[in-house]
Image 1 (cartoon, rainbow, N blue to C red):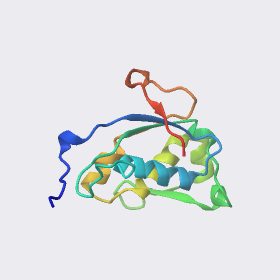
Image 2 (cartoon, rainbow, N blue to C red):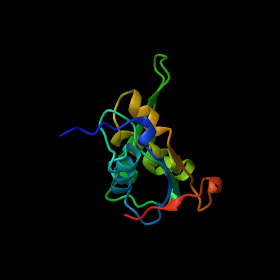
Image 3 (cartoon, one colour):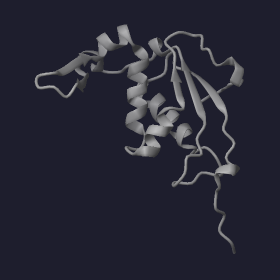
Length: 142
């Protein structure tokens, strides 16, 4: 018996488009993270990036359950003393809904160099249109 070892040349990357309208934020992020990692492929290996590219449209129409819109906040710090910033989810959904989905997807990926590389394979658009028609994305159904 021989063990199959996946090589980077064996990986075929596809582009998928996901409509976020009416989908719950956390469930959408976990499903997208599994596609970014390549867990839906036969050639999946934990040590290498075999994932696909994901384009998310209608980010402004994603469902957020419970009281998260008022209670959940995002933290950022510039590094200077007293420069901590907190932004409520409701305000961030009004101004930049793509950042909410990107942050949720980032939380579902690894916290290392390969996770940061996978995060570059996701594109989020607030509206129904995206500028990636040349890649011929396929619709991804969950």
